[in-house]
Amino acid sequence: MLEQQFIPKACNNLLESGSFTWSSPSNIALVKYWGKREHQIPENPSVSFTLDACKTTTTLSFSKKSNQDEFSFDVFLDGKQQDDFKPKIETFFKRIESYLPFLKDYYFKIETANTFPHSSGIASSASGMSALALCLMSIEKELDSDIPEEFFIQKASFLARLGSGSACRSLKGDLVVWGKHEEIDESSDLFGVKYPFEVHENFKNFHDTILLVDKGEKQVSSTVGHNLMYNHPFAKERFKQAHKNLSELINVFKVGDLKTFINIVESEALTLHAMMMTSMPYFILMKPNTLEIINKIWAFRKETGTHVCFTLDAGANVHVLYPENEAEQVYEFIKNELVAYCQNGHYICDRIGFGAKQL
Ligand code: PMV
Image (cartoon, rainbow, N blue to C red; front, side):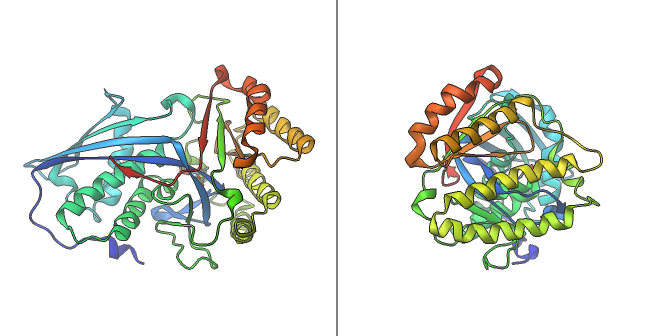
């Protein structure tokens, strides 16, 4: 599939006004996307669990305007006007304008709310950009009712990617792959696809408890972070490693091999952080409590033989992953031993989800 296939046919019968609401989830990468080329093309394939509890709900209201010279919109978070979100959305609109030619015909009111606190250190870009992309696709669907369901989701993912790369993995499916991988025919650099192969019972209903170690603003923005992979001394090997890890996960998902799953997922998290520690300029995004938690998880796993593991985003918070049949025991451990390392004792219980919904 090529970019050009997402350019719609000309349409003159524009709607006067209307509004659409979508709720879209966040996701957590198991094999990480870190490093991109022009037009948000990932340097390596990634795969993520879709989350269920961490969501953004966005209502997009639109009304026709007379002047078509520029984009016109306002953004509200939890009912409050949020002008500092505007530059990111303006950039998003510029990137997607050729795929949604009606953008300058309307004034948009974007009302958005997250189920998780904005200041939790959890990035809302994946859920936020995918929810907005879906609302925009609902307008396109009104203009062209023949759009098939599969194309609707694919194009929403394509658009979301241009807002924030990882957002393209938040549309549909519990496990989502983004980035071309030679063993996954359906995979594409342009959009996320539902993981197409067999997934063992062990990975159904998987839990993710997000420990909020540091709720501050991200120390390194994703844009800056991805750019650090240009001329990075270890970049080439890292991109190769991601391909190999995803290859191995195909069998892991099939046979339910939790041990290898843990090795790959924890190594991916630490590699992401290692890339940041070894770039120029360099960053340490973990906090002392991040390491305390990791060590506690390792000790508990050794002692109990359970299959709890961790992954990290580009920050200090820890995602604690564990299977459904060990959930009771691991959750007790989290409450008794890990929550003490969270800022103000805050954490979020999440589990694997299935994608976005129109409300
Ligand atoms: O979608 P972005 O540009 O914010 O990048 C996200 C990168 C990581 O969250 C660190 C990894 C990933 O694959 O989600």
